[in-house]
Image 1: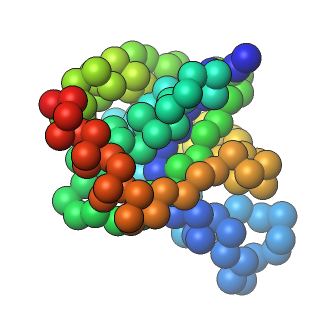
Image 2 (image 1 turned 90 degrees about the horizontal axis):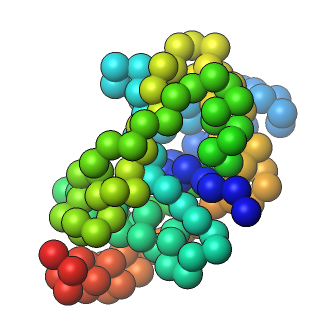
Image 3 (image 1 turned 120 degrees about the horizontal axis):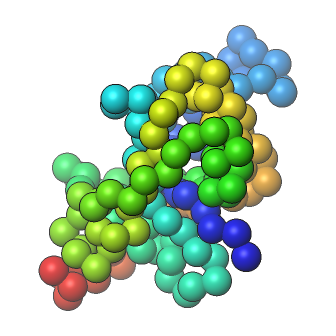
Length: 151
C-alpha cells in the first residue's frame, strides 16, 4: 500500500472554473494553497491502512490554527512526489499533539516547474476524490477533545 502526503487545501478554489477551461488548474488555488517557504511545502503522513491516520493529520493541522473552522484535506501519493524529483525530509511537526510530531514531512527543492507538476498531482487527487472535509463541529468536538487528552 502506498504512503501518502496530506495537507489542508481550499477545495472550492481547486474546483472553481472562473475564466479557465474544465481541464485547467486554477492559479488562485495554487497561489492560495501551495505557498512555499524556502522552496519547501509542509505535509503530514497519511497511511490509509492505519485507522485514524487521516484524523491524525486533521488533528495536527487544526491544533495550530488561530480559530476553529472546517478543514479540507487532500492527499497525494508519496511516490508521485518523489518522481517529480523532490526530496521528502522528516522534520518535527508543529503541533501540541506530541505523538504526531514525527509524522511531519517537508517536500524540499520546489522550483516553478516542480510546483506545476505537484499542482497537477493535487488536481488529479481532487478529481479522484482523495479529499475529506472535516466540519467545524467535528474539528471542535473531536479534535480538541483528543488534543486535551494527549497533550
